[in-house]
Image (cartoon, rainbow, N blue to C red; front, side):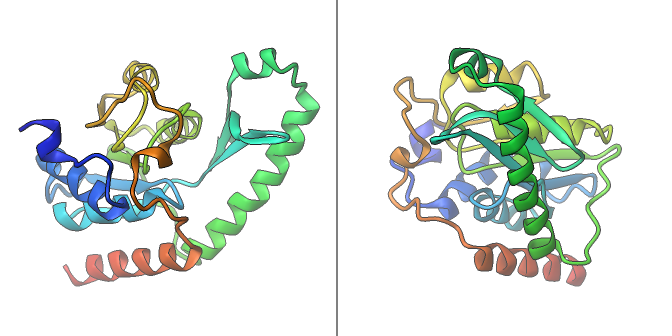
Length: 225
C-alpha cells in the first residue's frame, strides 16, 4: 500500500488522519495490553479514531510546550505529567535564554496542564502503564519537543513498548524519535515542513468540549465492551 493510498495530502482533518494511522497500526487491534494515549488537544480526535477502529483503550498524556517568550510557537522545551521537563538546548543557547525565563514559562504552563487534567479527566485516575504497550498520538510533529516530553513521562512507568503515531512530521524529527522509542508510525515526512497546519485542509483548534465529548464516548464504549 502506497502512502497516497493511506493518507491523502493535504490531510482533510484530524478524523481522516486518525483513520489513516489506524490502518497502519492493525497489528495492535484488540490487544488488552495496548493503550492509546492522546496528546491534548489536537491529538485527541486523531487518537479517538485509532482507538475506535482498533478497539483499544484511550487515555491522555498531558504535555505542554514551553514557548519562547514573544515567539510562543517556537519550542524551547516541554513539560509533561510526572514533573517531566525536556529542554531544547540548541534553542536556549541560540537565543540566550536563561534558567529563570524557562522556570517562569514552565510555571505558567504547569498551571494549564493541571487545569486540563481536572477538566478532561475529572476524578478518573491516570492509567497504569507498567508492562503496557503504549501508542502516543498527536496530530503532527514540528520540533517534537512535546512528544519527547511525553515519551519521557511514559518511560518513567516502565512500559513494555513505546510507539509514536503521527500523520505528518519533518524527517529529522522522526529520525530523532526513532532512536528513543520502539517504533514511529508517520506516513508523511515532507522535507519542506514549515508548520503542521500547512498539511491540513481543516486544522481548526480542538476545543475543551470536543476533548471531553470524545473521551466520554471512548470511556463509555470501554465500559460496554
